[in-house]
Length: 371
Image 1 (cartoon, rainbow, N blue to C red):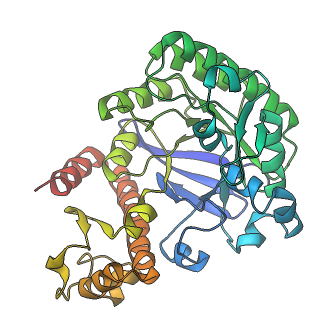
Image 2 (spheres, one colour):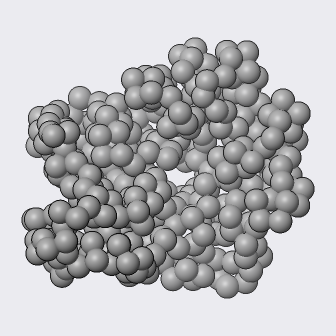
């Protein structure tokens, strides 16, 4: 099939119900994508991830470039065969990781690309737009991302303007060398909290006619109202007939706020990261299973939840695993947390279908934030 196709099925305000036709069948949006950084969703098998209802999952270009290397993944038949995941896979461009390693952004981010030291052995590396796309072509993901600069927050207007203009030139360079016919390529919109720069970034990126668009540069240290404004500024100038992806966002309330503003897909390491520290998402907010109050609690992590963890294990058992440092504790809570976010997006889709999204959002947030 090759390129993905987005179908807008219904709107409720700015919230969008849609579907994506992919090489691995049709997936529904809004959706949450679990993150499989090093070709694995941490602590889970692909079967566990699929059982949670996953559609697209994400893998990380930077980490796979360093280890095992894109050529080894290609020799193994591409990412799907390498990690045994028979659903669509998106690879990020590596930019977010690389820019966190750049020591001097004025000197080490050049027109060519980014110069940095490997976090593994300190070796000097250069990642360019062409190199990022070449790696992703070889990884053979279903969706590749353009190479962009993700500036920190806050930066000056002058810096952001230069950064946006450079990201646009990088997007054009990456698009020229993209040559995997079975892979879609998404453009990334930047611009920080500056509305006119978001507008510039959107309009110029859209002119290049990518298969989908991502809003970048959010969730990098700004407060929530600023983040929501960044989303609004970005979405405003994006086409209705292409999918919209908000990168690195996985807090339940942020997902709801993103959907209200017209976002279709989300990803984040949050559900598995907090799971490894003994925390679980629930309808009543996060629960911490390091707490002694769960020592003899025979109820599931969340009553009414349909995940494997909640159907089979008690809070007491999960707490035991977490407190003694057994890896299974993190795995069970990861299953629960990923299912929780996927179930949230399933319910959001139903609410949009029935024209009651804002009511659903209000009810969910009221219960989630109730102390």
